[in-house]
Image 1 (cartoon, rainbow, N blue to C red):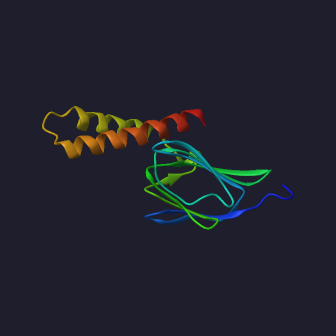
Image 2 (image 1 turned 90 degrees about the vertical axis):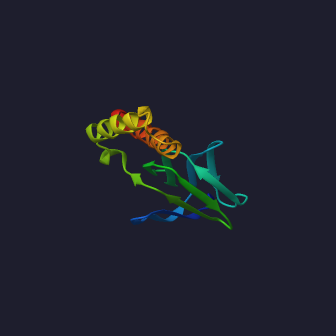
Length: 138
């Protein structure tokens, strides 16, 4: 790892800070595709899609979380992720996620649901499907 430049990353949820420290690389997914951030990256502001968030702390240490929707801001060798929810993969409960998936699918199929409710259900399904994939792969 000699010579690799680190930068500060904050991962925040409504419940509080999940991570605050120096990393070599941040990898996640925005609405336009995968993104990898290194030190001295150009400024970025992007909406985040559910994904596996990876923070490379060093050559021997990488931390990973299941990340929901959110926002990424990069400026002056500092990255901040404001995310609706973040979980370590081993915290994901496949049975609970299956129940949430059934609920979201029912809301999406309900002819009485308004457009906003359908959009929320689609957004929930996107997150749930990614979390289920990660839970099953763990």
